[in-house]
Length: 94
Image (cartoon, rainbow, N blue to C red; front, side):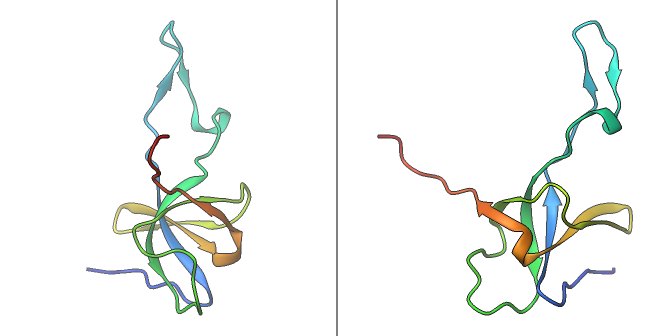
């Protein structure tokens, strides 16, 4: 089994899976016409001093950052730590 271990302040993400999109009339919308996901779950990180995120966090990242990677049939996303803009945090309703 092969694993990806990020280096040089990179973060490995699993993107929110996108299901095939269809219009109400059944027309399939291709991936090229739909907006790319900008949220991902942190799977692994390189050595980073005082990181604000940890493995398991869901993060929001820059639109044009990162690199898609396929390994053993699975698709992952490598992104520079600096391209992560926010993390999703669960809060209580007021």
